[in-house]
Length: 469
Image (cartoon, rainbow, N blue to C red; front, side, top):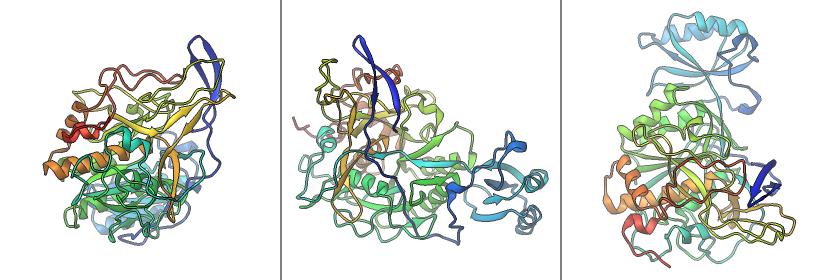
């Protein structure tokens, strides 16, 4: 989330930039249920079904067959179109992800009577970027976000023990000494190891161990499962995400501990019904398996959460980003600073609709602070969490806000047993701090208040313990 942005603070207007360290976000691998094509997904576009005549080929699509189409009919349709199968799906509809090589191939698939629908296999991305700060390794630190949401070690006997958390991301650093990573995992690529850093950072916020090294997470007793749906650069697609969700649906209840919470710090621009298979997969997790699905809202303040997938689904708990600490102010021309519990200038938001269940469920720290140095260039100080190979690093984004909520849900479920996801949502919203006043409006003019102060996550209030001062 870099670039020029027009802002206004008080009576003044100026250009502020989010200062980000250079570097890319990669991703990880996993244990596929079946052979997959490992070519670089980012090299091929999603098929443009609206303007197919102008679509670039080859392109990526998801084909759903009619229920009566048997194996022979499906293979025949793909063979006649010369479409290369990448992955097969069965749980939420008879479907395959494919590479469509030419316009003639696309026309052949469109005319096939056994095909129910053709969907673009749209790109999905990790929702964070590295922020300034050298990686470090030291004695255990309690991150500002953990302190701010009231999840200090010792505040409660609850640790998330017995709760499985699926980190649907770039994988997890499988040998990280500060995480309890399950040996069972899934990858839409090659293996489950995180080579990007995003998934490991997210996992650390939710569940880093309470020991003597690095950081501690919200639920240090929870077990994290690597579900790798993003590649080594933080890129995936609807089909890789669908594959991970299908694996969770097939395995969540048989694992020890079972998966009770899913964290997806990823997403794309889109609309509610633009991929019915993806929506059905997430609906199944919530309504059939009673799994709470937490999703980062997105890092574009110019759009509403209703314009994001999967954050705009009513089945998920969409989380916006706010600051954990007061920012510093050395910009003499402004005379103000960005306070704790301010909406991050980059966050996507959107008022929660109690009828449709669509909108931001709650805000949580997605950055430590937003500082103004003498240069008057806004600097985002990221959340401190784990890095690949040990030690810590910082990242900012709604990707970092979401796992604070995921860890809180692990504690709630340990305490209360089989609580339905919608009841979890109500508990989080009802126990939020500064409801009706926070998150405070971000100072940049590209951020627009959505009409609701939903409050900021309070773990201690959610689990009914005394909150630290």
